[in-house]
Amino acid sequence: MSSSTEGAPIINKGRYLAILVCWLLGNGCLFSWNSMLTIQDYYSYLFPDYHPTRILTLVYQPFALGTIAILAYHEAKINTRNRNIAGYTLFFLSSLALIVLDVATSGKGGIGEFIGVCAVSGAFGIADAHVQGGMVGDLSLMSPELIQSFLAGLAASGALTSALRLITKAAFENSQNGFRKGAMMFFSISCFFELVCVLLYAFVFPKLPIVKYYREKAASEGSMTVSADLAAGGMQKHQVQEVEDPNLKERLSNKQLLLENVDYAIDLFLIYVLTLSIFPGFLAEDTGSHSLGSWYALVLIAMYNVWDLIGRYIPLLKPLELSSRKGLMAAILLRFLLIPAFYFTSKYGDQGWMIMLTSFLGLSNGYLTVCVLTAAPKGYKGPEQNALGNLLVVFLLAGIFAGVTLDWLWLIGKGW
Image 1 (cartoon, rainbow, N blue to C red):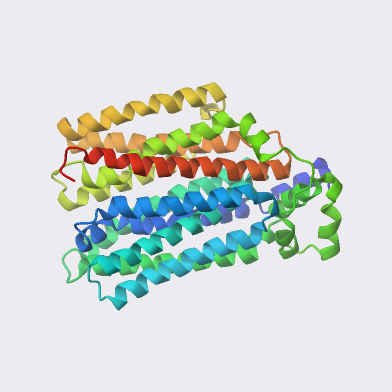
Image 2: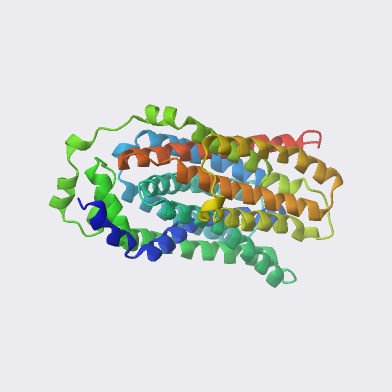
């Protein structure tokens, strides 16, 4: 294993390419799902009686949460390479299935097609658990700037899909079957991009010098999850076995890691409980009618996604990074004041105030997510960092699941 002095030039070699690849892989982690969310106006048109914005999110989350819980429990024995490739491949196949389903039914609504779309939503949840947990765990044992780039890519997928949706809506709004044409374009782009991510992760990512360096370091500390990626990165089989010394595999248990970082876990849970109790269901269905008409919900979702992306880059400015554990918890709890703010704005405010609130929701979501996930893995060995990354994603997805469930409370008193 190289010393830190010998490793310094390796870490810097190909650093910016690694940051770009991580950004693209983060983008691919949620691009398909965000495409489904962003064409909510098409699904609301096809399935007006089924609350698709809320139902699809509610279907997605149990599959994501259940899968990540199982994967996190067995994390130490799971081949990270196979896990992530399987996740990106499932994203690709599921996006393709949406195209096939729409073509087979000629774009007609109905309970049968809606069940099919819900099944694809569940598949997206399974793929997300494979990729998001696998990548966050893998990048947690590397440089913080790589995990920040991956998290920024997650947000960028939302911003890109929102921008594409606004463009396709403008392009096809007055054409016959304009909703459907825009949706088909989305699914086609999603398919292509997920295929690119499969190839990037399989053939480019493991060969990056900075990635190989950190994986070799993790293997020397007892990690059993990186051997396939080390081999894919060019290490010979005997070299992989040499760094995987069984005597070095002592590490803190998942329970010990969780007890030491329970505040970070609660932080992520609370961030996403709040965010998903408002976005996208409340924004899509409960903000009333305004001068923007059918563009209103799309603009709100776009503003959330853009500011979520901006928020994930703010911690790169070190004076603005929030690393205090107490400070993070205080900021996250204060954020719950957004609930009454959204309630009263939807009843009495105009669209300008709602756009401003939605922008702040996105900004705070992105900023706090990056602050928590870059601070938490510090001070541990590679195998422990990987395990902790997986555990934190469990709580993140649990928060999302709780949030989309609580989102239904906005419907109380509205006759459904």
